[in-house]
Length: 165
Ligand code: 2AL
Image (tube, rainbow, N blue to C red):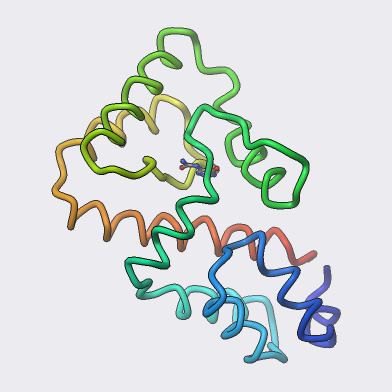
């Protein structure tokens, strides 16, 4: 989609385009209502601003959309395809690394009661495992702040990917 198309789209079309980036209605409404944008950077900045801060229930709802690291999103929705491409770089994780990630995910969920979330695009499996091990030592409050940041990064990267240059 070109920015001009997004600017001129109906509200429903704009919201439908935004939803796979981040399925939080308040965020979608803020971005759709602030159209038209003079350029891509203005749109990305609006995306960042509306995602800071999130409420705890928004974080919980958004987390439910993300498959575990190392697990393939099911289906062929726009959202599933985005997740698959973000995690594509992990495809080459060797068996030992894959086991360590699965064990780390399990330990994280046991401690924090929610899925381990990280912006996967641009990170190797090794880097993700190192971040997972560090984050296992955090308090729940520290983790909430990091998860908010990671959700923002994922949403803004998806938004950027949505717009053709
Ligand atoms: C994901 C995902 O699906 N894409 C991404 O960047 N991170 N999942 C996750 N649990 O962190």
